[in-house]
Length: 80
Image 1: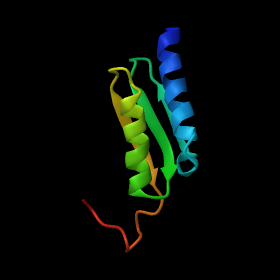
Image 2: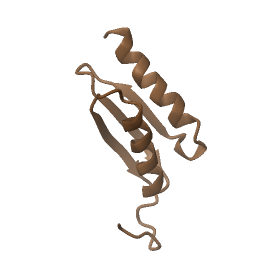
Image 3: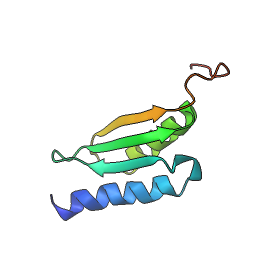
């Protein structure tokens, strides 16, 4: 894989890890150059934040969201 592809996901990973509530998220670049987000977060808002960070730093690459929300059974959650 070209170094530029790896540095893109490394940059995104650094920015995601800067947010302590996103510590369970991992950003990798697959063999097609797609940035994939995996892991588990505690809320839908955290998931949206991780995707936002990735898209803002993807340099035009596609971002695939595979993040799971562990608190999705929370009766307090709302859908927007």
